[in-house]
Amino acid sequence: MNWLERCWRRAVQTARLMIGVPDYDTYVEHMRRHHPEREVMSYARFFDERLQARYRGGGGRCC
Image 1 (cartoon, rainbow, N blue to C red):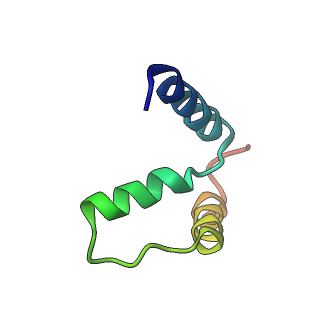
Image 2: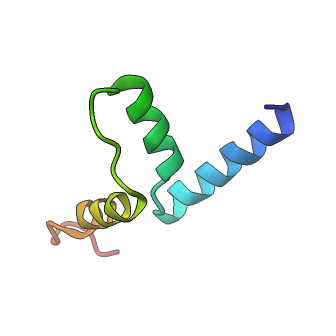
């Protein structure tokens, strides 16, 4: 991967994190590298789980 492509991927990842969109590719890479014995969630399941984690609990934040 060349320098420009790495910079672009990092910028996209940063933008997604800033607006609260979970990064599925980073999750998959992490799971394969650190937890190869575990099953990787589908994109739909991952996204739903991230939304639940973000919005459950209520209370503490105004936005």
